[in-house]
Image 1 (tube, rainbow, N blue to C red):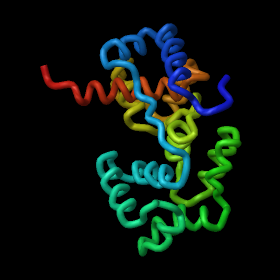
Image 2: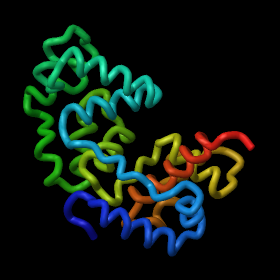
Image 3: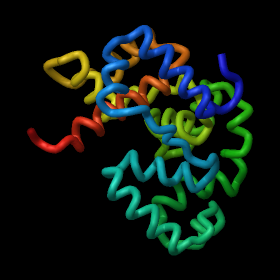
Length: 200
């Protein structure tokens, strides 16, 4: 089991193990190519970006995040507190400035403690915590149970009549330990590959 952040070599190893044990994942790689790392730098800016993605579409989140960075550059808790938007100020920046959320310490914590620290902040839910562990901390077994693209990828691959619930995705993902974050990347690859494929 990995103790540090996942590297591109770890991703290759995880993909090799998952595609060897699950033929549907092998088909995803064959059809849509090797999945991306989807990594982000740990810290405040990534956490804010992930929180925005929790609230709106990825495109809207990117546009809002870019506007925030233009207003508060560099994007830090202190520069965000200088802005007038109370919701964002109170959600994350106050906790970081006050020291109750020490983002630099999260890398040294286990997954449960990372989630506990992040979810103690108003506005941070299970999805944001899981995506932060997956993309900013590089945890190989982070599982974004409530991610709609992950659920859609599962429904597509297993021909389900409806999207699985977050609890159902957790049950299905048990077989993919300790590489659930790699499985999520393959499911994103399936979802995006299908969504972006031109009509026949």
